[in-house]
Amino acid sequence: MAAGRAGDARRAVTPWLRALAALWPALVLLPVVFPAEARCQQAAGAPAARAKPAAFVPRALSRFQRQEAEWLLDERLPCLGCHRIRGQGGTIGPDLTEVGSRRTPAFIYGMIADPGSTLPGSRMPRTAMPARWIELVAQYLVGLKGSGSQTPVDPPGTPGDRGWAAMEDPAALYRQACAPCHGVEGKGDGYNAANLPVRPTAHADSAYMATRPDDTLFDGIFAGGYILNKSPRMPAFGASLSPEQIRGLVRYLRQLCRCRGPAWEGRKEAVRDSELVRDSERW
Image (cartoon, rainbow, N blue to C red):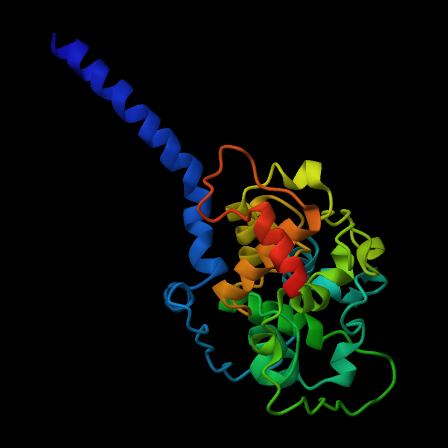
């Protein structure tokens, strides 16, 4: 009798353990993708707090550390989606092949840790990552130098430019943040698409987009491609855009595809056809 009850208890608990095991990678990654304090502020609609970059001291990397930095750039971080190193990567941002000769170490570190504060007006999204990764990638980039002697000069930025925060129109935001890869009309044919290892999603493809719930679209913009098991070259915008800006982009994606999400998705937050027409007229 006791053995039977024990067996019933194990069968009851097993599905919960399996569910927890399936969620565990996401639970572990969530604090890395977006720190807890910033998540709370974003949920309340407030801008994410920006920590002041720590003092950065250049140092030589070991061979193993260089390989680790290259792995992060190739397989985990979105940097090469926009920047190019030794002929590999995107063309949205500056080529980083000899960035150690052009920019100071402090500037390189600051642009990784907090681009908006380091270069006012920058449209480079801030990528949440462990402090160790910031240090490692910065050390690697500082070491990328040309053969000639050159005095590094940092750009001045545009004081007073609020960057992404000033962009309230979803269509304009899409053209700035998404169109270089996904195309102005959402056909996956942006000027940077040819530089990526995976073709960007065609947001105008109604057949595909109808399979993606609004929550997944929001998560992809907020946390980037890696968290959804997609290309890591898709950057995360959760540390740069407000939740309302991201929701506006989701609505705009529904306008591009002229479609709704899957039938099982709740309709409370879904965009209806009448709203698409109204949004189209307003934008």
